Image (cartoon, rainbow, N blue to C red; front, side, top):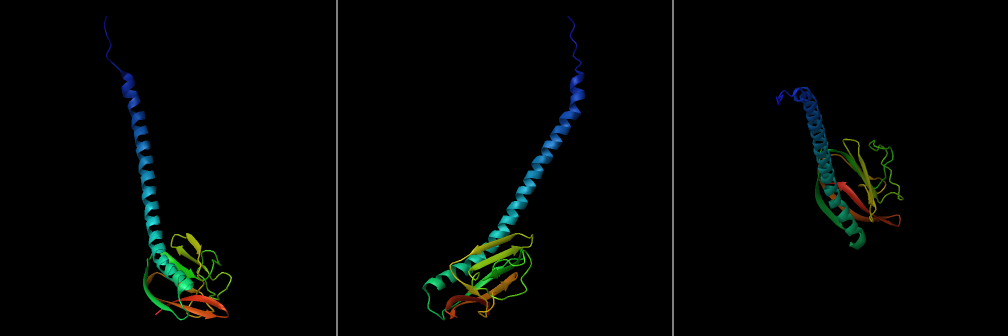
Length: 165
């Protein structure tokens, strides 16, 4: 018997295999790229949360255990990936930076921050916050700050004033 070693199917199928390989590789690269971008964003958010936690932790300790007039100084570095952070208020205008800094005692235990990508994170605390004036809440933009946290009592309520030196 004569055998025929010509296999034309392999030549015809080669471009299809190549296209499948390219599509699969592209999908893998796309998933990896999205994963890296998500990881970078989460890292930036954690940087902001870490700095805010320094303030909140100290404020809650002061609010629970310190005497009126207690003053604590801390150094904070808010990264450029953050748009702004607010202590003593809830988001009023969505993602827009507040323009009315009037403190509402019903929401003074809240704080939030907005990232440059438009992501908003809102939290509440056991402590009530205010700005340098107890009539206003505190807003900070990216940068380095030497902050004062001061425990004050006004109008029968206790607040932790958060302000830059």
